[in-house]
Image (cartoon, rainbow, N blue to C red; front, side, top):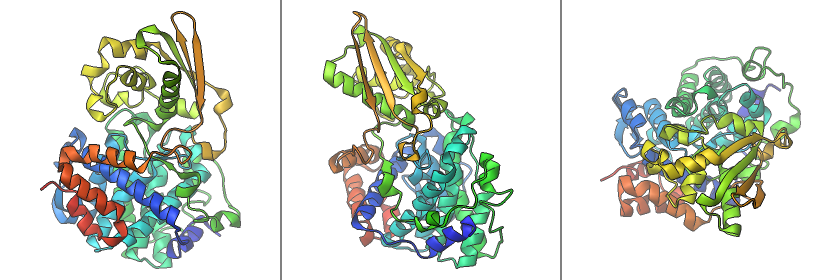
Amino acid sequence: MAMIEGLAQFIQHPASMDRKVRELCIRSILDTMGAMVLGSRTPVVNRALKLMPLSGRATVAGVGQGFGARDAAFLNGVSGHELELDDTSSSNLGHPTVAVLPTLLALGEEQDCSGADLLQAFAVATEVECKLGRVCARALHERGWHASSVTGVVGAAAGAAYLLGLNREQIENCLGLAASMASGVRENFGTDAKSVHIGKAAADGVLAALLAREGYTASHTALDGKEGYLYEYTGQRFAPLPGEWYRGLGQPYDIASPGFAIKQYPSCSSTHRAVDAFVDLDRAHHLQAEDIAEIRVELSAAALRELVTPDPKTGDEAKFSVGFQIALYLTGRDNMPANYAPAIIFRPEIQHIIGVTRLYHAERYDGLPVDMGVGPAFVSVTLRDGREYHTERIYPVGHLTDPISDRALEEKFLRCTAPVLGEARGQDLYRMLRDLECTSVAALMRQTLPI
């Protein structure tokens, strides 16, 4: 069986979702919607808005209505990812929700879908992108692709195909079209282009599904054929996959095992384990910035490939600096986007911590099972008086093994939405998302707009 055929079968007849899967889907949708609303006020979104005509019925969260579905998906994808507040997945070594949710919101609004439809489409979309990621994300990562967008566009197309009710042939063509739309190079990390990767993946998910509905064709071996997606993007041959792989779709859903991680900090996920490990050490030993001689951070090759700007000069670069994240914590500053600015980065106390934080390659963390993502972080702190402390973080706070509470998730959501919507409207949006299956996508999107 070709991969596209197996995926299409799942998309038409997805596995049932139990209560745990539904709750996890709602948490991820809710979390990313908060990031989307706050991200709508960023300069990168404001610049993109100048290029997007009002030509449809879709909503850009925090901005307004009347956009075409593709443009709304693009803008919501950019805004949802721009501040690095969106969740992550070890299976696709990237961001599962933000690459697909904007597609589903745009089409769901245009198609007048229910919240229940959205929830099922989201489960389908993330399952396809993450199970595909389990096959190829590591190889994509090694070759310098942004795995979030390369697997994300296929997931977005899958969710769109489900929402539109495409038939089997149309679904297969939709996935084949999406295979030719994948893109995003990691060399662009630390710049505006990283968020464009996600916006493009979401917009192309819309386009692939609409083209397929209109009768556009694509190869049914576009994913795993001789010159298909898997080989061309990874340089490796994965086909044929065993039948167990296809039967494993939704059994269990990837969002439940190994699960997604909801972020505490607006920074690259490869910084999080290291920062959490440092926090663990501080809570045990009450560290003071002026006493620290060195912070040694040992990471896998995969994590180090993402941390491209350890000595940041801009807010975008600071998202990829472990030293900057630790410096915010040590100096008592809020780790939220407002502090990702040169005025903070170049303060002497911040520069001191950045300067004593050093990253090292730990070969023991390479090649671990895919469930572990980029692998653990081992952090050692050496004080000026010679004392040393060290610890290891296997998973970050926010992972299913160490989840953030519902209260903490609500607080994060309101901190993201209140500056744009106001406290009361943000709370109403939160309640609507918590009760997602009892609303419509159109009503949900109206609630994302300031009065």
